[in-house]
Image (tube, rainbow, N blue to C red; front, side, top):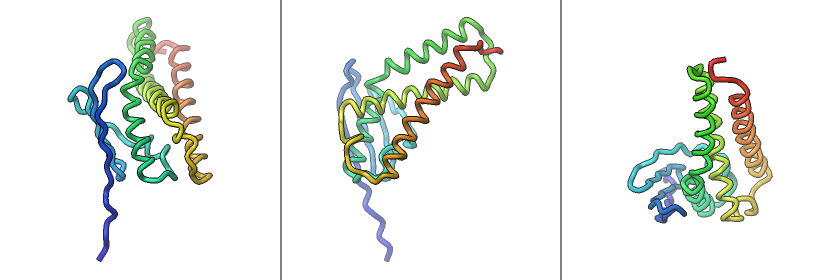
Length: 164
């Protein structure tokens, strides 16, 4: 008889620094759900899947919950980025579809960097907990890739108008 490993979950209820009540539920199966003021915010767990490799289940769950909370804690950062991108389009309307896609990628990368920066700032285990060398390398690839997407795409979008 095959035995499936038990799914471990972690639930965290708290408030953001600006008072938004949140509820975060993460599982060892990389399923996580986030509610902000009762509003369900679906979120794909690809970043957590990549950045938590090589960690014990409990540490992975705690850092994943912190990352999801970090999205809400750092909300002003991606909002400022989004407003700056909107300003580019306001100056030069009628963006091409691929530039809108590039803006979405840049915006998501900024938000992931902000959330993971929050994790590192509030829990040293994110970078200091022992894990295999390959997992450390994967974490560095995450940071390099997100930084390249965030800065590169934002730079490209700011250098040319959306309709060019």
